[in-house]
Length: 65
Image 1 (tube, rainbow, N blue to C red):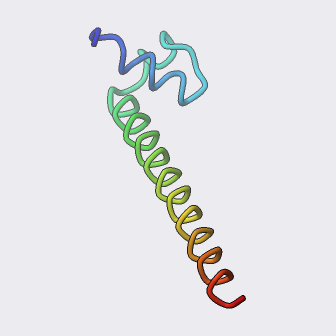
Image 2: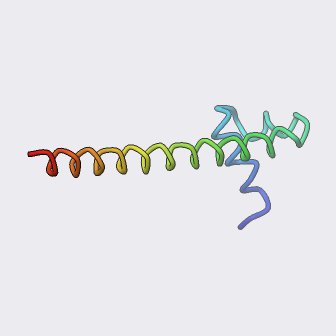
């Protein structure tokens, strides 16, 4: 991975230009990447929970027919 990748990824997440982010404290890059990862994991967990809930409901409905 190129050394500039985290900066570009963080800028994309924050909705700014990479050169604007370069003028900010480096912590912003770390925070943005950390939050993006946390959101991604939370969305994945929510999707799995929804799928498990739907499966359980279908099984319950089939067993109560």
